[in-house]
Image: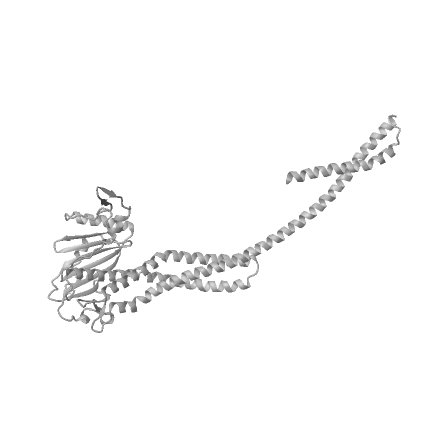
Length: 435
């Protein structure tokens, strides 16, 4: 299919994703199925690495029988060999193999012979991963009301007709001794196209039902941890009211940070699984709405049965997700409160330190001023002494006639002022250099 659009003699270039978007609508078309038919459906958990290995194994399987295998971009493939048809589909986290086998109903007896004896073709392909879903679906012609109680466990039997009563489908959602979940579809005039569509929708219902419930064990695993964190948060919040001092508040903050890290780790691990479970649950409800169920013989429909058995599990998953989100917000608020208290304590300590530094600086300035005064006196004393010797020497040599004592006394104020000015000038220069 071309993504470009031809107009006259030219072409309109298509968006790079146009072909993929157009093809997605037709990615998994319904295929007609003739009644009677036996369908064995398997779903395997596959990682990207397992998915590539599975694609290679399926390609080898097809080539060994002279058939074309899947292309690198193919997500689904349908092949026929003899009376058997295989439908292969690859999804983001699982891969399905659906085998359509001929069936004569074994003289009108559903599910006979057992599925284990018919599942040999599945063993011809390497197992893609752990098996999640194994369904034995029997599509039979209408032969009057079937004895469903003899085929299924009455305690968990769910049966319904489609919107126009042209089909009856039933199951008990339990594994038989060979590990298959049995599903019976009675064709009351569907026709091949509608029979194929109903069969595919019923198989998807069972597949997505199982995948949706994969989140429940994860929720049950995380629930004790979430509960413990909730209780410890309550205790820490109570201790916060009476905590005094930086060390106590810092210890509580470190504990809250550890609790938040533990909660975030669990939420990150479960985020994909919980989101996938809720998405799969929505697909299950959409498939049930599309079929349009009608009650049959007073039995619970698939919708009512799954609402009673499956909805609590989905609510458990959703509730735990909400608890994780709410608990994360509470931890963040408590941590912010404690962090504010720690910051206030640190600011108080810094204020005391600055006050102490200011006091020490003031004392140092007072000491410096004292030392400066003493320095001026000492230097002046030495300068005056030198001047006195100079004057006495000059007087004894007859160079000056002034009395040395008088000259020395007159020089004292001048020497003190001069020394004080020089010391002050040096200190001012040092202060400017430090600034």
